[in-house]
Image: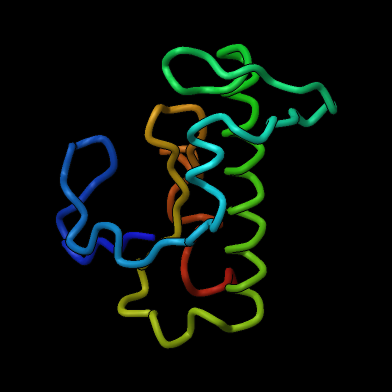
Length: 124
């Protein structure tokens, strides 16, 4: 999780987050996964083979996995917002939530949709 408190910051401008990597989810067996020890199963139940560059399965399967993880994070953020979990974080009326995958396989919201459904404050 990262926070960007720079009021001049805009997506796509290459600005660094003011608080990059503020918090992270620790996954106890991630080291095993990175070493390709346990098999990774795709969303259709097929085992994915490790590739030389460190991803699993085909590039399409990798992108699909990133998209599903991104959608899961969006649903989680919206549920947290609806339950009032972000009330203490609302620093301005324009504060927004977003989910980005570094390789570009997933991003929410679409640039043109920013500020409509992704505010930290629930929509009125």
